[in-house]
Image (cartoon, rainbow, N blue to C red; front, side, top):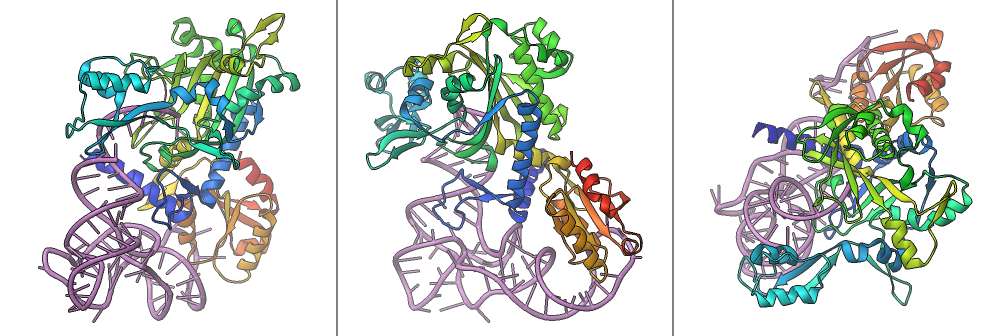
Length: 491
RNA sequence: GCGGCCGUAGUCUAGUCUGGUAGGACGCCAGCCUGCCACGCUGGUGGUCCCGGGUUCAAAUCCCGGCGGCCGCACCA
């Protein structure tokens, strides 16, 4: 229908803009064997990502006094024994011997025989059930073979011996395994937030939709370690208790606006601590330019939750492709520190006041690439048939363009002088080609919020105009004040 | 992985059925013009026709295989 066609073209329009103007592109694209699900950021995309992460640092890490670390991407097998990923981050599969179709064995058994196969069931057990009940290929009736677990982690061989290790499927495991030392050395008290930005890797069966589902992707994760007996004793949460969350608890069709305090009192959110971090993450996306009505915090049901989660909220943003999950807000309970304590033998218990406690964990696991897609798609607008990227100024890859009104002396020399004055402190671009209107349009397309224009009056009195992208209005300022004015306008 | 549709300059596309010199528009570059919002002028740059193999005197076109994209099934940040 019309709605769908419009939705597709919006995605297409953004992908085209991204390819043409250097936001992102398929990795290995010049080779025919380029695997799907890997993307390279171009100069503008890399800058946008950098600014997005900087906003995240400002609004979450620094605001809440968190620690930020940077862990290895390759982690030992034991890490994933303890985390449960080796066993639980898998799908049991089998292949039809005749037509090669691949099936989720547990789902196929349940569908054909009604037998619910427990997640822990071994492959041998599943194969036995398949033989006993003569479960066959749905398509051609062939016999099922090649029973195996498909683990979504990328397995590596380390060194000449090929020691077993894995690329991390989420960044947070290094936070958990580093926790004991961090806690001893960094002199903090519970609750303590530890953050990390970095790559994670998942061997998706079928990556698609550009940045939305990739095999190698960026996460910005925050793990808050807290005393489960003191989840409603968080002074820094108090100022936000009157803030309204756009909450969609389990079983509801539509999100509702409700204050943190009321959500806690009505039992929709389990604690002050959880409500507080839901509020922070919602505020963060508002500051990144997503309108509140396109944001929701949706509670996940039992069957939707990750294997480690005891309470789970997804921050989702509405796009032309539907609601996209950007942040998994999971109460992981004692799953992680408990698991690592058991497997490693390393004590994870800490003192909180005079109480000995194994901290629980609440996480804000944010998908960066997805977020950037949503921000870009949301910012994409049109004026006179040409794209305008209405990015928040603090996220714009190019912060200002310096343009002589005419490509003629002495305007060009003066404009280059001003460009030189700004280039070390700002991401600025100089452009004198074509007409001034054409250059404005070119900057609008990549979301440059301000264009500084040098005209004849500049030569007379040293003033320039600053043209604002969204309103196209201009103000005239002294050129020597530009650094200070830009700095103010860009925060 | 399966099914449907698709793959031609940076982008959009004509040509594919019916095999015979790959064409246009936009963009980009250079110059001209230009006192403020693309769509004035001139010239220029542009293509492994997704990749590999086959049929043929000759393949963008026909056949086979692969890769990738979009939409569905399943999973997720």
